[in-house]
Image (cartoon, rainbow, N blue to C red; front, top):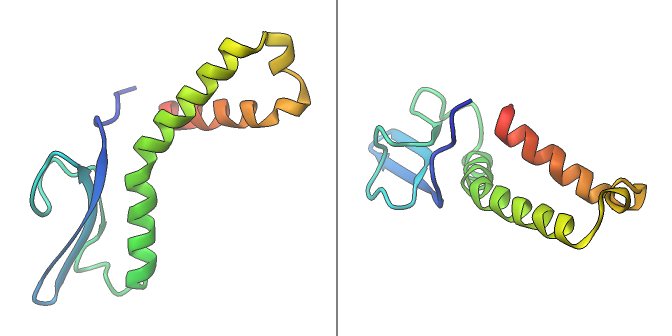
Length: 109
């Protein structure tokens, strides 16, 4: 599986007349929609299917996902440093299992 685009990522919201583009791109890329976009959340053809607020909320979650994955990986690493495998298998550490599951989902689909 390919690696994801390095972060951090940010939302762009670009309008020109009736055209509206909303997407996520690497933060170091300046300007509007480019071939380096992470994803485009809304294009003119799709703009009428969802509210602007919902589209923006979706883009915000997508743009934060890079940072959330990095934070989750750091948390899991800290847990693994502080606890042995038997402790981490305890049901009271369900957040650890959930975090590892989310990381696996992000990395392998």
